Image 1 (cartoon, helix red, strand yellow):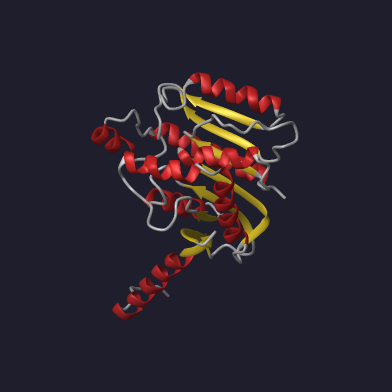
Image 2 (cartoon, rainbow, N blue to C red; image 1 turned 90 degrees about the vertical axis):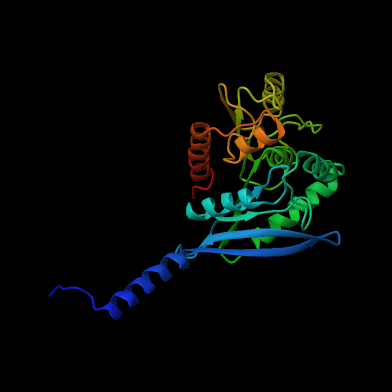
Length: 266
């Protein structure tokens, strides 16, 4: 027998359906310390998925741990992963001005051992989460974060894979064959003035000499920060050579999802 729901029944049904949707995506802001300094991370996972699943670290752009980084963590959670948008600068160090961002980045990269310690501490936060299979961990980064994840791979950190989006490809770290265990994906813009063709070529040579398992995708005519929808406003306000590119962003994300399916296959 069918018929219209009474107003009370309809309200209950709506409440239950909304509750089910809200129950799927779970997020948590996490404060943790490294060398006595406080950092703020953001966990995201889908609690409608059962059991442990791979974890993915998200490393922010040079602006710091902002909404864009958290949005990426939520996208990963929707795809079936537990994600942790980490903090490489320290609590409260987030900005929308290039000069301040540059200062934050300079401080963070000034001591490579501290940078690695901050990354390692965030990895432990992710690994210790109840939903995470701590034997399946990857990392992805944007701009500054892209350079960070590549350097963590060069240092031989225990990662299944890393993905760099418009990240710097140069590094003072010169890995030897066998140093890099993580598989690597790089997405870069062919018109990225901050990651010129010469840098891409050197990266390819370095990775080949290190016998790394890697791929590089270059998008013709695409500028720096192509993954971030806010890049066009930044370009206009600060006259910076950056720009969002929807097609490149979608292809990069689709490629990343295929990459994770491959490296996490059990």
